[in-house]
Length: 89
Image (tube, rainbow, N blue to C red):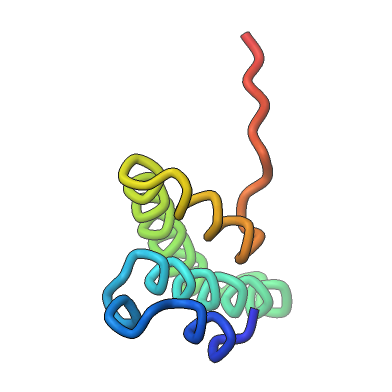
């Protein structure tokens, strides 16, 4: 998703610090670092940075899921970042 298209969806007051916008920014960084690491496989500092960003995004998504499940589902649908989970016991 293009940044300007995503920003237009978010209301004016939620643009900078909202959880959705932070997840969007982290997702873009993750995609950029992933493509970088496909070319430069031994760039261990970038791998470390990618793991940190993944952890931050995971915590933000867990927070959003707990606070507002509808916004969480809409966000992961727009960004296409998580597959549906099937629980097996």
